[in-house]
Image (tube, rainbow over all chains, first blue to last red; front, side, top):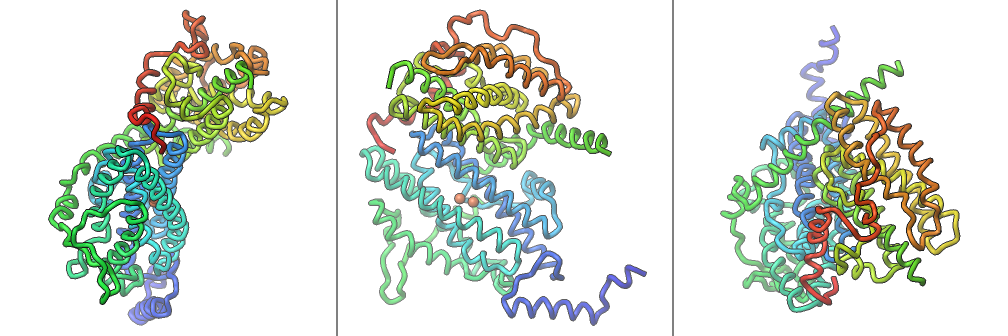
Length: 321
Length: 238
Ligand SMILES: [Fe+2]
Ligand SMILES: [Fe+2]
């Protein structure tokens, strides 16, 4: 009986879909208890999970420099930043949980390679300046991607993004400031900053995903108000922001084709090496193996701790009755 | 600023700095995301304390990056390697219970550190609570976690005696705090179904502990990692 009552008839299903479509048409938020198409749910889970995984994998390249930060002030800033990224992971896993998947399930998918994280974190942090370059470029690209997500149709994701974006823009400014100190420092420091920007520039442009013509998920995500701007549009916006900032830093961007296009009102830039992008995506980046192995090791080494916490909680729940 | 006062500020600053450095090694490696956040939080509090204290004694970066191993005045407890999570928690338990008592005394005094101590005593109360909660969970969790926690409290016990050795220039009667520390720690261990270690609470080489600049072997490597970049660019600002 209940099964029959809970399952809307054909007319009911049409009504639910119509209500969902109307909400999107009015640019309203969809909330966890609202009806939503299965594919919308699946798309969001995939995207939010990938975003959450990126936050936690992204801790690794930067944490690589915590113990070696060259001043106590920089050490404090970096520790706080890496801690923020763990916090972003927490908000995002919580947002995904509102769609009916647990953090454990998602972590398991990350650990077994069934879900991805942003390819940018498969590049190594070779010098201290990489920490500044990541803050400036990688957090900068993340903001450009994520500010529109604050208006994403799914309420919990949009709200998580509001908090995340505030912190990311803080990271971006700190990264810029750190690079500026290097650029204006000794000759060796300046060279270190330039080298880092040379290595991080192109991978940062790839963070916006494949060109619009090759982007498989984009059209549907735009229709669902999950995505608001195309990959190429966001990439252009990012380049336009970065060029004057690079000038202010006294650093150059490694692209001989970069120049202002009066007619378009944007900077033109050179061709991106999509072969490299696809290789890294396929698992052949410099750090893919290492990042995932580290992540699995930390998780496995922590298993006995999580078991102990669970055992303790069960015992003491029983004791309390 | 008297030499004795600087000595005291350096000793307490080094304790906080070295433990913050060790906790920083956990970043991205903790058993859960929540613990990653918590351990970094504690590390950041300690780093803040260290920067304040070392700035009273001189330039914080010169002190942190340009001193040799034998010039550091931290107790040996805080430099002990992280080990497994149980070792880290045992180190946190012993040290945060000590630091809470110490800062409480300092906060009630009128030295230049009273202001810092008043703020830090609240931070450290959280550190202590975190360590106590985990000592209970691990001690009274599974057979495996109990055994690991037992090994950890035993292994680190020999570094606890040094906490209560007088520090020149510090206006606190440290030996007098040991009784209360012992009472707190024993109570926590008992609740965690563990027993207070019975071995000696200091190594045989007691005359040359960390406060006198004699450290354990792993400390040199920790400093090498911490200092190498700064030292590779003499005079640079960051
Ligand atoms: Fe983030
Ligand atoms: Fe960030």
